[in-house]
Amino acid sequence: MCAKRTIPADPQLDQEFDKAFEQIQELVDLSQADALFPTHPNAVYTTSVVLWMLVYQRMNPDASLEAAVKKLLDSKPELLPDNKRVSEGTLSLNTGAYSRARTRLPCSVAEWFARQVSQSMIEASPASFQDRRVFMIDGTTITLAPEAELQKVYPPASNQYGEGVWPVALLVVAHELSSGAALVPEVGAMYGPEAVSETALIDNCLTQMPPDSIVMADAGYGIFSVAHKVQQADLSFLFRLSKQRFDRLRKTATLVDEGANWKTWSCQWQPSPSERKKHPDLPADAVLSVQLHEFETEEGKPIYLVTSLDESVEMLSDLYARRTDVETDIRNIKVVLDTENIRARSVEMFHKELLTSMVSYNLVVQFRRQAAELVKVPPRRMSFKRTWTTYRQFLLSSMYTTAADWRERYRFALGIAMQDKLPNRPGRKYPREAYRRRTKSTHFKKREKGSDASEK
Image 1: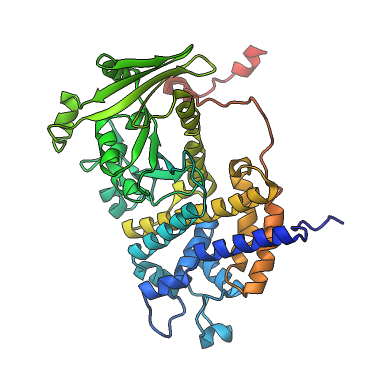
Image 2 (image 1 turned 135 degrees about the vertical axis):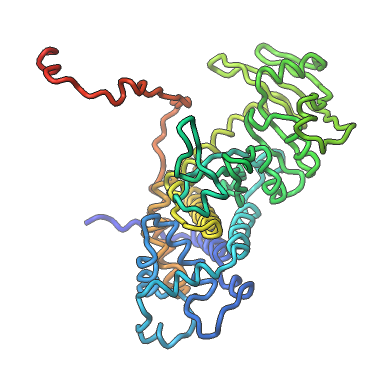
């Protein structure tokens, strides 16, 4: 027989577990949502129940409305109201009532829930850099269902042959470095007359960050207008620069320090004429006091950074090296949680499913962090996908049953998750690469008859 995987009895571990249990209960206290959007006294699908079911569906991307209703009847969470149909087991399996409840749910309630979870996680985690929070910003796109309403708001891509059918939404997401929590994303159109850039979507992300935080991003955000927005929000920044922009700034900069493979300049950064044309709202006297850093990676590749921070190039280069974590986080959101295949048929429902996807992601990240604390390893040494599977299989169906049962189930699931570590493979690096497809002239070319015989 296989040994039961559970956390061994230990007073200190019990104390740590109790703390983790209390935190997770605070993160998923859906009962507060009922006060924000009260429903009819006899309603089964209250606001908290609908949010619970939406999270279940996003944790199980292939779960239909019917599967969510059956899961609700099977698990009977404590969130369910004291209703005769529930207690007698006569609640209809028809999905119409749940579908209407999902539609009635205000998007603002789903956004409140997503913000509460992310902020609770961030507040419970230590600071990342010099007692300050660090947020990494990046963007991505997802395709939506080919519905007329979605196509109007998020037009599909087009080429010389016409417009496609799949709406394309542009997302900008900020992740907190220490906790890994994802903030509420900002969404815009990728194509069409109302198309926006990633840099134009960061405003909502900045408002969710605590004062004096550090914003980190790649060269796509390394422009004056973004840096000015960050500073106006009482935040600091660490951006990568393109070589062209770095060379332009270096012409007016003053060299202040240098080493074997690095140099540092001080600079008064002013917007270029083209930037002023694109952003006429910039003040006439807009200027930023920044430092420019140039250093080489172990592979000899030059990296160019601009920052409002005064720390050394060694510290900042180590901090920037962690920016690649956000690419893994976005992949987990899109691929593991299957957010890139949301099939909502309306704009409002798309936003609700996207927000509950972020809640699902953050719940798994929190669970992963607690499992990592128990085995004394960094959270990112734990596999997100395996931890997600553990959370989904061992915990999701048990959420909000009795407190004692939930506590015992959570303890058992943490024991399983402690095994979900990534293999330790030092020195391995996986650079981002693009693999070209064959040209269409040969990609779809049929094999000629007799070609197999002639090649033998």
